[in-house]
Figure 1: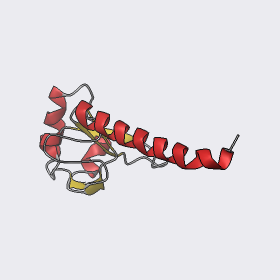
Figure 2: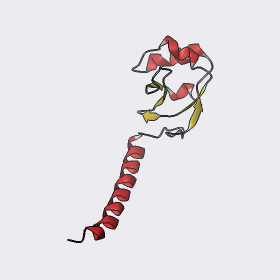
Figure 3: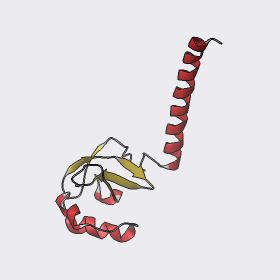
Length: 106
């Protein structure tokens, strides 16, 4: 068997798979928001803690008092899932993601 000859074909299949995953994410709304925000974009969270807190009434998540320190800050979008925009949580490890309504992100 010519293993070396399989490498270009394998790389081509990987590229096709990556493109297909990106298309599925776009169609499902994952990684993309209706207002054009995409994963990796820099966005600003509303400077009004009350507005951000009130936005959680329509979300399946709860307000955390640590979120008030995030208000007015600029953050990289880490995830988008079902129209929720995931921003880095202000935790010590830096690995957490907190979801916010697009209505409080610009």
